[in-house]
Image 1 (cartoon, rainbow, N blue to C red):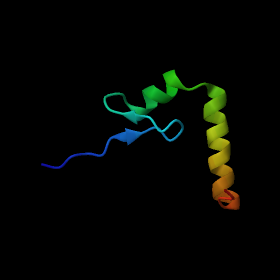
Image 2 (spheres, helix red, strand yellow):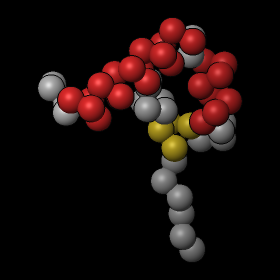
Image 3 (cartoon, rainbow, N blue to C red):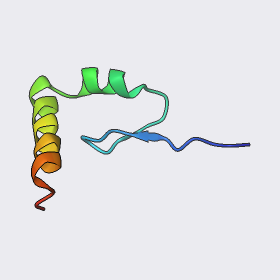
Length: 51
């Protein structure tokens, strides 16, 4: 029987066992935290990862 790898939140790295990722993002992260994540990911894609 095949098993699925649990989904991990890309922001806080919490493993989501029974909660959909979208629900977790809506209820557990502020808009500012989500915006900062999107900006940092976009900059990494455009300029390359500098870390």
